[in-house]
Image (cartoon, rainbow, N blue to C red; front, side):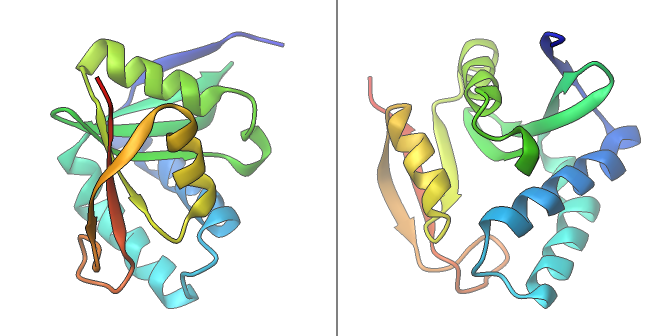
Length: 147
């Protein structure tokens, strides 16, 4: 198997990244309706991607997942369903910590797999919001690595 590499991405990659996002969300965010997914897809493509530094993890030419970092916070991390459980998410977290000194992450509380993933890596909840960044009733946990 080829080595996974992490590369900076940009606007030209948005379509490929949103495809990864959608497949990941459909596999993990059971609490979202079809309308929610359509709404978020548009917000991510038209606003959120532009607010973060995006990095993809690739095997060969294929994007397996990506992260979006803003200052010291991991704002998004999504892995293709068929690539989960292979250490790619941890690689992206390690990259964010090492290259960007990122030590915080926002995660949907209802995405229990993601919450467990971050807890396993040493993140603890430091804050909880009843609503997400779009004002929708999906609680968000702000988690941070403990020193």
